[in-house]
Image (cartoon, rainbow, N blue to C red):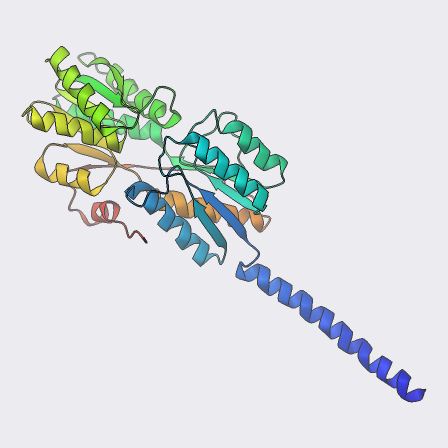
Length: 328
């Protein structure tokens, strides 16, 4: 009997030690990030889309640095809103601690974003805003200021007398709307400036090409064009090059794909607004980790863009922007 009691009393501290060890291991697991579950849903997961692959690289870098598990997904096409909604619903069912979302549509993604919050999952919105701002944190380029910079660049290239056409992706896009607002704000302050109108190319290079040819035929007085995304820029450049108007029509675009860099070198594209997609992905996951750790993430983080021209494209800092490391 005495032996039995002795064994029991010996087991008590061992059990306590085991419980303490389990708690300690749980703490280590949490700190190591094994329990930090994040799902990142981009507008596109197409490996040929340099912008989103650079966002992916930033997100993966942050996940590694902060020892979190980040599962990165997205539809093939940026315009496939229905598939993106399905990916968000699937993510909700998997119950991660945070969903990082780059909404393809500021209105159609609102209801599924609200489902994220109702499920008790934190939400970080990146790149484009959602109506009603339902996220815990919002991280994006400062598109209004980028538009102002694009307008100033074109005004300078046309000696302060621009006759401009704007080429966008679709009406109502919050990113494009902010950029166009900034452009028009700058040009409205310059009395000689004329904006002949805005055309939409539905994020298709061929439609941008056709729209540019039609604009230049209908308005031969145009001496400048501003394209609000990469596909519009590439389509417009193709038309301008084909019509031998590279000298007379100053083209300002958005993006930093290898094709746009080549157009800069050729002098067909005169300036491009380069965003910092790596920063967007990195800060999105960083904000997610802060929310998991019980910290208050920055409610809004605006990232500046840079005007890159043929003259400054070889500056060391601009080379870093044009040729970021992208993990495939």
